Amino acid sequence: MDKYALITGATSGIGEACALQFSKLGYSLILLARREDRLLTLKNELEKDGVNVLTFSVDVRNESQVANAINSLSSAVKSHLKVLINNAGLAVGRGVISEGVIDDWERMIDTNIKGLLYVSRYVAPIMQSNKQGHIFNVSSIAGKEVYAGGNVYCATKHAVDALSKAMRIDLVQDNIKVTNIAPGATETEFSIVRFKGDAEQAKAVYNGFEALRADDIAEVIVFAASRPAHVNLNDITIMPTAQASATVIHKSMP
Ligand code: NDP
Ligand code: 8X3
Image 1 (spheres, rainbow, N blue to C red):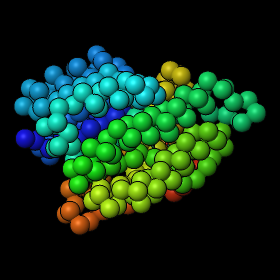
Image 2: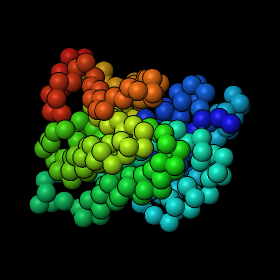
Image 3: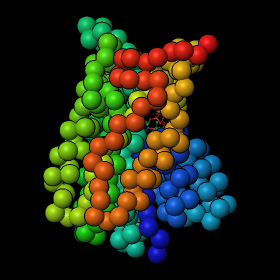
Image 4: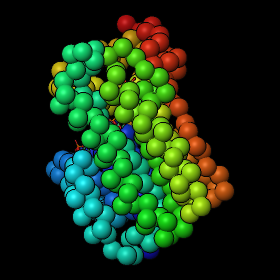
C-alpha cells in the first residue's frame, strides 16, 4: 500500500504544486478544495502518470463536509496517511480596521483558523493511531509580522503559527512532526482572491521584483517531509531574495 499525503487547497498555487511534487516523491494523494472541476482535472492529469488520487470537493469551513470526507477514507488508506498539508487559506480585502468588511473577516477566520482546526481534528487521531505522521501548517510572513491593512489576515496567520507550536506539544508523544511554513510574497491566485478578482491590482503586488513561485514553497515542504525519521524542521520562513520583511521589498526591475 502506498503512502498518502492529504493536501487542502489543492486546486491552485502552493497546494497544487505540493500535489504535483509529492506525487513525484511516490505519494498517493488525497486532495481537498471547493472547485470540483479543478480537482478532477488535476486527478486526471496525475492518474495519467499512474498516481493514486482521491478527491473531495470540500469547503474546509464546513465541519461536517470535512468530517464526512476524512471519515470516508478506508482503513487501509488511513493506516498509510503520512502527511497532512493544511494549506487552504486566503486573504480577503486589505484596509484599516475601522472600515473592515465583516464578511471578509469571517471568511478569513473561518477558513484560515477554523478550517485548519477541523481538518486537523479529524486527521490527527488517525496519525496518533498510526504512531507517526507529519503535519504542515501553511502560515505566512503575516504570521510573524503585521503590516498596514493586514490586520485580520495577519491575526489568522499568527493563530496558525501559535497552533503549529501547540500541536507540536500535543502530538510529540505520538511521533507526529509539525512544521510551520511561513512564506513571503508568492505569486499565485492569492492576490486575485485578496483583491476580489481585480487582476491589475493583484499583478501590481509582484511588479518590480521576482516573487516566489508556488513550486519554491512545495520544494521546501518536500525537503522537510523527506528528512530522516528523527529530524523535524519546526518552522521555516521562506522569502523572495528581494524581500527583507513583510513590508520591505526591493523593487529594482522595470
Ligand atoms: P491560491 O489562491 O492560489 O490557493 C488557495 C487554495 O485554497 C485554493 O486551492 C482554494 O481552492 C483553497 N481554498 C480557499 N478557501 C477554501 C475553503 N473554504 N475550503 C477549501 N479550500 C479552500 O493561494 P496560495 O496558493 O498562495 O495560498 C495557499 C496558502 O498559502 C494560503 O493559506 C495562504 O494564506 C498562504 N500563503 C500565501 C502566500 C502568497 O503570497 N501567495 C504567502 C504566505 C502564505 P478552492 O477555491 O477550489 O476551494
Ligand atoms: C501572504 C503574504 O505578505 O501578502 O501571506 O501577507 S502577505
